[in-house]
Length: 387
Image 1 (tube, rainbow, N blue to C red):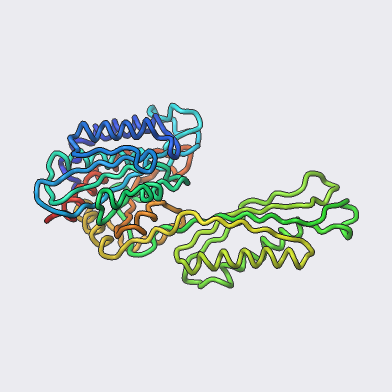
Image 2 (image 1 turned 60 degrees about the horizontal axis):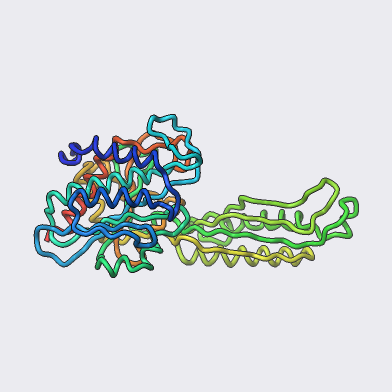
């Protein structure tokens, strides 16, 4: 089945928005110019209410349907870019050194803006649509900031939906699943304190490099021997810093890494075992380990009923054979998770075609996907608020 005719008709306009946003990336909460562009476009479409400054720099636009209805659904796009120097070579490449839209948030904004223009023009629904443009998805927790600023209560949002592009999935295809779809992301830092000395007399020292090496090895058993083998968990040590000279045993070493999990049980397990392994291994070798464990985004968990509605909307655009309902959980993280903790809803992935991977300096959002995303948002909104 084709995309909506109205979405195809504004494909070129949406491409213009997308490429403009791509050329002018901003980071985290410092998205004032991006937010102003979004707010200006929403007002030009005749959106009933445009509120800026939610969650510091977030924007919310409200469209009222042409039929009576009390329910409001939220549709969310993220606005921030990444601190990466672009190497795509495109005519519309970033004009800001060291910053680029390497995750497709420019495309996400353009698709939701396109849907806003169509929905404000037709208003073929009962109730209200809240268009949520969120800052600081890339590590800043902007979703939580908007919720803490009263997003759900202020706009009486009953359900909330998100979408992300997915490189490697053909354009025109969608995928989601009931339950966890993206991981919780935590990080840890382990400071190991030994007793430094001359490398020629190791017996007079407590070597933190040896302790750190033992900790790294032992941490591999968290997934292989402590966790349920059918419940995904990732524990990766990605940093090991120690030493400054070939003939000196240092007094300290430092490890760092990340944990990805999909359930509260695995999240708790990983933190507990990291602390036990680090502290007890250091003690066994005569040293001390200090563990600093930070919990970041929770897992993104789709609600059953809302996921079925999202998949149905996608099938009505793409066709039955081009929508997967059993997407394998993705170990990347997404702060839309906070919104799904606050309200029922669903997160769906949309094909970006044969492009570079996300967070890659050569990545670019595929403009051919814009009309599919716009169509999906319009169809989802009209079916969820059919009255």
